[in-house]
Structure formats: structure tokens, C-alpha cells
Amino acid sequence: MPAPASPSDLRRWLNRATFGVTPTLLEEVQTLGWERWVAAQLAPDDKADIDCQKRLKSLRLHIEYEVQPMAPAAAGTKAMMTTQAAKKVNENRPLRLLDQPLEQTFPMYGKDEVNYEEKSLAMQEVMMATLLRAVHSQWQVREMLAEFWHNHFSVNADKDESVMLALPTYDRVVIRANALGSFRTMLQGVAQSAAMLYYLDGVESKASPANENFARELFELHTFGARSYLNHRFTKWRDVPGALEGKPEGYIDQDVYEAARAFTGWTVENGNEDDDGAKRPNTGRFMVREAWHDPYQKRVLGTEFDSQRPALEDGLRVIDLVARHPATARFIAEKLCRRFVSDDPPEALIKQAAAEFTAAFDAPDQIARVMKVILLSAEFRSAPATKFKRPLEFLASYLRATGADFAPRMDVVYQLDEMGQRLFRWPTPTGHPDASGYWQSGTFLLRRWNLPLVLRDDGWKGVASFHFLTLTPADCRTAGRVLSYWSQRLLGQEVAEKSRAVLLQVLTDDDAANTGSEFSGDDKDRDIRIASCVALLAASPEFQYR
Image (cartoon, rainbow, N blue to C red):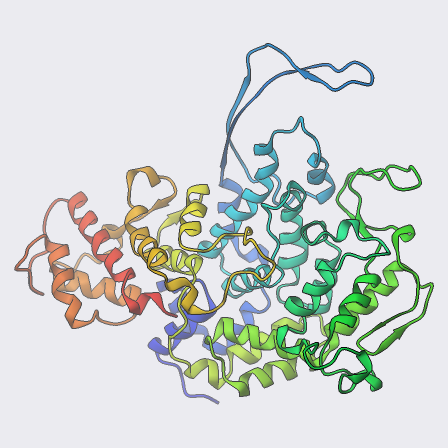
């Protein structure tokens, strides 16, 4: 058994496993112990997350637009705008689409009479729930994983209103429901989701020629990874090592082409008229159009597919093959280790995680078991804090450390955009980069350092409410004691000596301030000075890394 962890160790581990340390969380882990806390996190119970659920129910999202009344359309004609005054919609609404079934949300697709702002609420509600859960959810490991899987199976909700309207179901049913579950189940959910079918143009994929977009990303981004692409060495399937035994080491273009053929006919109920003249429902639900399927013999990863098999069977067989392949186990394990440990994760840990991924393939909690290996490993425990926080992590960790009451609105999303993180709107299927260097450009850093000060502006009232003076213990009567308290709260240690004099000056508004300087003044003034000091602490390297 490992030796009991010190508070500094626990803080370092929590910084990598969660969206940020709070005093309550640190106390909880000290009481439970790291192993028991990890076990609880890997089996979350939503009913126990009472505070977060209440906040989600009370959250309101502003919607405002004008709509011109339409005159009734005569038979065979389109409705026309009237000369009547436009009607203005200006409301604060609860998150109604977040948990709504797809068949109730998706019918807005293609309807010109439904305003764009109404449709965009589907995406915005997922954004707001993501932000709020990152800050307030009890189940922090799952929230980190939900963000990881959204990045892994990235869709750009800005591409088309179809992806936008499908996003709540994609988030709830595909990503979050399987974030700690079976990778194979999640992969099938992704492949059959309206969000991915529209994003990668699979929704219209028919035989001769099949659309290759999804098949290409399935291999390169979702399962095998680019390092297992062997077309620079082999151009015929039988030449790939292991292929003749049905166990190829990697994939080539032939595998992509054949897999694309296997997925032909996978589409959604979108209200379109099919080739036989029948009109589909407009629910966004997955469906198979057999008439579009390429029924002839195929060969994927050295495995022969008989001809005249159903479209569903062909596609599911491809998913089985790629999900079970050792290259997929290695690729997913390495990405998880990179996300939770370091930009350059230890090879030994990658192998352990990949072995568990394979051993637990048929388990309903496969991903949770892999995460247990990672979070309890010696490599995780000993890794230094060298992983640069992504913008959402930085924002959430600051709000969590300061005990802020947080009720997000779209302004927060725009702030993250300016720091380089485009929630659910990354322009390519790769997802955001997971290397620290990307987030460290001058422009991104400037926005990041200014964020804590921006959040204190009057224009952000109701979004993030801080209680710096209230949270500061009453016996902190000197500037030195105040600085010590907030340094420990944010950093888990005393501030570096070279920064101490500057921060004391901020706390006292005195160029000659020292540790023993009295922390006096009216409450509002002292609260503002603490806020400025804490903002500078948040800009320190010690807070930027996890």
C-alpha cells in the first residue's frame, strides 16, 4: 500500500483529475483517502449531485430576437411576410432542450419559420450546462471525461443547424451516458448519431461512390490513430503485417474505402423524400436506407464481409473490428494518459492502461476501469504539475478556488473563444490540441490573465458572484495573513518571495507595505483589494499548471 498522501500530494492529484480544488473537496479526499475517492468518482450517482441539479434547474438563458408575422399561405404557395409590426421575443428561459428527446427538438430542422435564435438554444443550453457542471458538479472526474470525449469525437455545431439541434442528445445519450462505460457502445452511438452523420456528411452516403469522411476519421481520429496509418509502406491489404491472419498491425486506404462502403445507407429520419417517394419522419433518429447500401463483398482489416449482407450488419461489424483492435487500445490509452498525466506520458502507464482497455472490453464500465488504472498509478501520483490548463479548466479552477456563485451565460463562452477554446465549435474533426504549447500564445495568455479581473466588472453581476472578504477568516488582520490565506487556498503554498512585496502593496494600497501592515479600510474597499490580489495569484505559473 502507498504511504498516506500529504495535502500537497492530494492537491496536485486533484488538480489533474478535476476542474479544480476547493477547500471542501480537499477535506473530503483527506477523509476518504485517494483510493476511496477515486472509486466513488468512477461510479457517479446523479441523484446525489443535489446542488448542481438545483443550479441547472434554476439557470436561465436569455433569448432575444424580432420576428415578422407571416400571412397564411395559399395552396401551393409559400407564406409571405406581412406589413404588420415585427413581434419581439425577449425572454429568460430555463434549459428546456437539454433533456428533451431528439424527436421533439430535431423537427425544427429545415423550418424557415422557426427563428435561428430558437434553434441555436439547443447548442447554447449544452454550453451552459457544461460550464455550470465543470464548476459545481460533485462528479468531477466524469465532467473531465465528458469534455475529453467531446474533444475526441468532435463535432462542430456551427456547421449546420442539424448538428446544432442534435447536440443535446449527442451530449446526453452518446457522450455523457458512456463517458465511464463501454467504448464500443459509445463508438456505435457516435456513428449512428445525427450530430456525427450530418457533421461528416454520412447522412447522404450511398453506394457508388460512398462518402469516405466518417470512415477516414473513424480510423485516424476515433480508434487506430494516425500512427497506425500504414499506407506509406503498404498499398495492398495482404501486404500489411498480420493481415492474412485477420490481425493487421494498422490500416491503409483500402480499409477506409471498404469501411465507407459498409456504412452506406446509414442515415437519419430528417423529413426528406426517399427514392421510392416515401417521406421520412423528421425526428433525427437513426435509420437504415437499404436501397442506398452497397451490398457487395467487402474486406476490412483483412476480414472478409460476405455480399448481400444488411447495411446495419456491415456497419456494426466494422465498429466491432476497430473497437477491439490493439491499436485502438493503445491510442485511447495514450490519449487518456496525455489528458490526465502529462503531454509526454510514461510508456509504462500507457501499456498498463491499454492492457486494461483490452481486458475489460466487454465490461459495462470499461472506461472506468481504465481510469482507475491511470488515477491510482505510481506514474500519476509522481507526475509533476507540468500540464498547462486549458481555458475551461483555468476558468473553472479559479471559480472553484474562490468559492464563486456561478450562473453562466454566453459571454463566458465568448471569453473562452478568445483564449482559444471553442466549445462544441472546433472547426475540424481533430478536436482541440491537447498539448500545452497551443494555449500559450501571447494573445491567449493575455486574455487568460485578464479574465479574473473581467469577471469582477459590474457587467458580470449575476454570472459570477464572489465573496472574498466573507471567505477571509476574521483573524486575518494583517496584509501578510490575508496573503497567506489566499495563497494557500489557490496555490496550496506560500507565494514566491519575489512576488510577495507586490501582492502586499495591492492588498494595502501602500508602496511601503510589509507583512505586518494592517489590513484596514471599509468592507467594499478591502473586498476589491483582495479580488485584485487573488486575480494576480491566479495569473501565477503555480496556478496555471496542473
